[in-house]
Length: 239
Image (tube, rainbow, N blue to C red; front, side, top):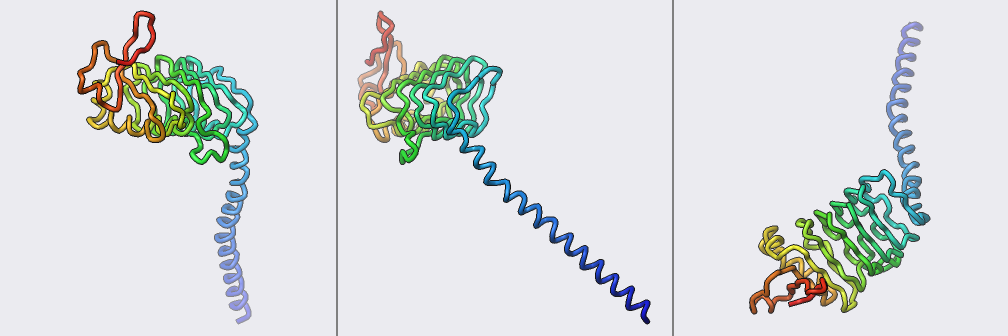
């Protein structure tokens, strides 16, 4: 009888130990993961201390890579850089100048500003040069960040989201010139042109113009968008 009781006791003790291990290990792991979360957040917000970026050997810029940079006023993307990820430079205050020479794809909200201007990033950019190789611009890529600026979208860029340039500042000298003709963008969707213009002019009478080698019809000249061409001095002129 004594032996039997001892055996039962050992069995119960073993069962209790196993239950503790089964419950304790996952709880300990959960605690460890939660403990790491604030550290990861600190690493993300540490972008605010970055003052310059070395683009050598960089071909792609990851999602959120440089969001909330507060000390960089100019970004010049080299020929090696092919794509810029989602929200890569979103909420980056002090940005004044952005230029491209080689990038082909600009992701969703890549340079998204702050509509509430809580971190001082709204409408700060006054120079934007997209170069000649851009092929696509995502949703909200330049929302709430463009001030008094002239934007020229190269003919190479045939994939432009309708919300790519919505919410300019309320400056009256902002403009968007497409080097491609209107048929190129109408082919995206029959409503694309009207939708794009409506979004671009959401908060300002931004000039949106498409390239045309010939004078448009009188009916076309009454639209909300414009047409343009180069004069003999290679200056952009509206019809």
